[in-house]
Amino acid sequence: MKKNPTVELKLPIIKDMELVATHTSDVISKHMQLSEDDTAEISMALIEACINAFEHSETKEEIYIHFIINDDNLTIKVIDKGKGFDASSIKLPNIDEKVGSSERKRGWGLMLMQELMDKVHFESDDSGTTLTMTKNKEKDE
Image (cartoon, rainbow, N blue to C red; front, top):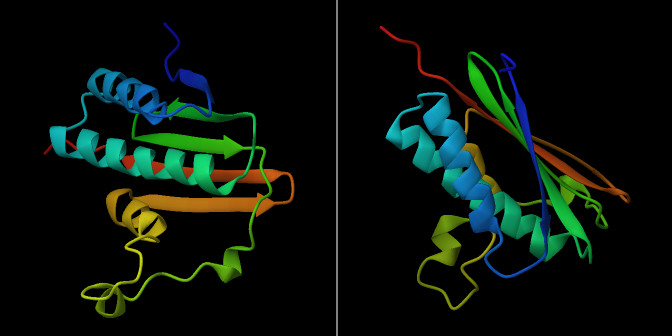
């Protein structure tokens, strides 16, 4: 078996298809011997990333997910061929304003991904968006 394999998925925009991605991440996490907490955090971040790609990219096609397995970490790329967005226009929600208001309780995805993963980066233009998330493997002590 290749030492650091890459697993690639192509997911159509179908309800609950993000669950295919999380099932794959669970299998990869087990293969990498990641902790249960890390595995759960990866799944939650991946669900957010997929839902964002499905809802905001406005692509009618599919999204692509690459799981890049390394000795020290797992890198996940979620790629869409949608309309893209201006990263400077993204504003993190103000928790004090959201809680207790009638405002939609949306807009937490990026902040949640950043909290759950060790590194989150995205590139976006009018040909699509690539979100890259990395979870570092805990060092054995």
